[in-house]
Image (cartoon, rainbow, N blue to C red; front, side, top):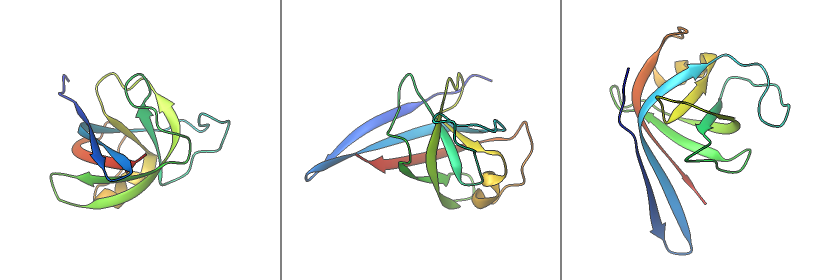
Length: 112
């Protein structure tokens, strides 16, 4: 599946937001970027384009059903066809049932 991606940096007062829009996928790795155990609520960003600091809080939304959730960046991935990878059952927070092939359109942002 080929998908389009958009990343925008939005300046605001003394900080900036990064806004990412595109395909969200899920992953089942057990160990994150700092040898941490991955758990529900963790996510991976596409490291070659967007690599926020470990433990960054990311606000994300399923744009199909408007369900929003907060996830934490605890891994870094290649994500060849996605902007954000949600760890396994974390997709339930977006109103979806986990499946290894699940993907959905979404938008996320964080402050830096």
